[in-house]
Length: 95
Image 1 (tube, rainbow, N blue to C red):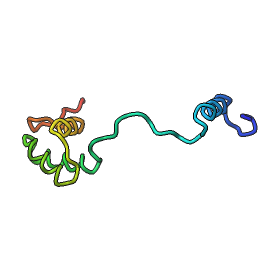
Image 2 (cartoon, rainbow, N blue to C red; image 1 turned 120 degrees about the horizontal axis):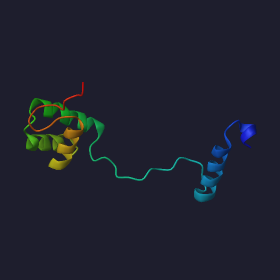
Image 3 (tube, rainbow, N blue to C red; image 1 turned 120 degrees about the vertical axis):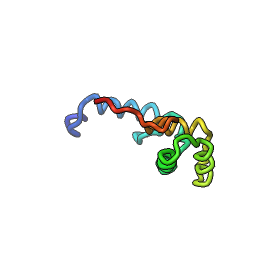
Image 4 (cartoon, rainbow, N blue to C red; image 1 turned 90 degrees about the horizontal axis):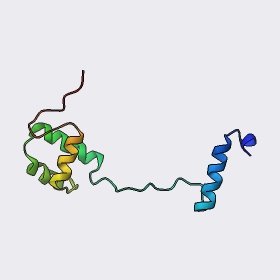
């Protein structure tokens, strides 16, 4: 089969095992928790955080207005992932 389809034997074997286990060869959904913030909401929070980095409660109320209600910890984590911290300074990039 692998020679006829010009794919490696391991690929054919993994597809057969997947068929036996799940009854389909479609890509199945991954495990894990969905993101609380959409990409659009995250970008909006970063823009607001750049304007006033010390106002987490203001960011929380603006996230409710945008339709992405979030807790302070979620907003703080999103800002930290974007490189923004409470003192208004961004993360230093290594030279």
